[in-house]
Amino acid sequence: MFSNGQLIFGTIFFICFVIVIIYSYRKDIALHKKYYKGSLFVLIGFLAFIGLLFLIKQYLKH
Image (tube, rainbow, N blue to C red; front, side):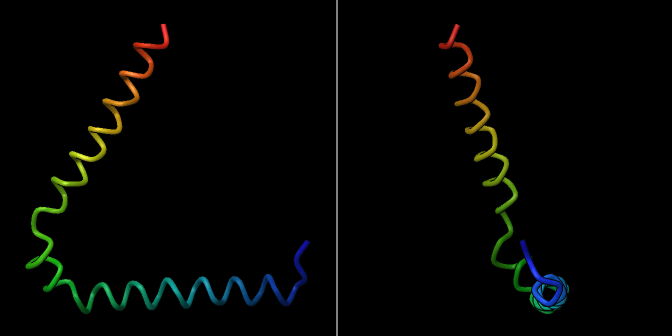
């Protein structure tokens, strides 16, 4: 399916990408805390809404 060279390139690319993402996040962590303070509640609300839709679907299915 993939050649050895493609697998090696993909692995190295993935490792480098993760390292750059972690470095960028650590560098901007102070800005994240300042500007995205309430984002956790938005995530929780979104997940609760999706869960509620799932429960409604299951209830109406029976």
